[in-house]
Amino acid sequence: MAGGWGPPGSAEYDRYEANSQLWVFAFALMACGFIGLFLRYRTRAEPALGLTATVSVVLGFALMMAGNVAEFRLFSHLPYEADNARMWAWLIFLLGFLSVLVGTLLLGVWTRRQELLPRWAGWMFLLALPATFVAAAASLYPVPLCLATLTAGILAVRPKPMPHDVSGPATVTGLP
Image 1: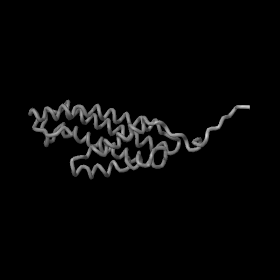
Image 2: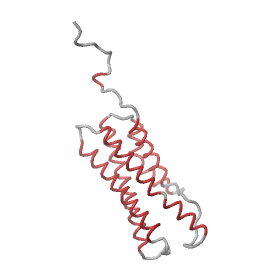
Image 3: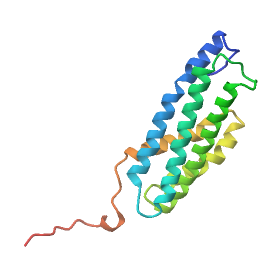
Image 4: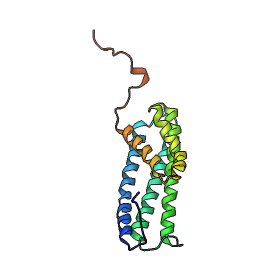
């Protein structure tokens, strides 16, 4: 979302390139948020679904980072709209983006089944993929993923709720 850009070598492109190079750090932090969410709320019930979602998200962010680094640090001098290494870097980025969105969809299914997180969080993860296609019409395609990532980070650091079976009145045991 760096604004306007021109051909490589122009002042507009230099600003676009500098802003785009910072995304790799944001992607790394986003991946950490999802890992933290999974580690915090993993359960014995359906661990494979939660793990699959997390692996899909983390692999996706790794591909996005690799594509970003390749495009803006290794092949930035190459023109757009050509069959070159820059195009392949962009495709790797897009595959990573799709992997993250599929992972958030799976995370939404896992979240809804676990009932450990608020219902709205499960819906946020479930709707990230379809909302991205709707947001793309207004050139806002990163917004649903950013909202899902923000949700993951907030839920990873919030106080863990009490399990359902011990949320009643406190009892003192061991006293005569």
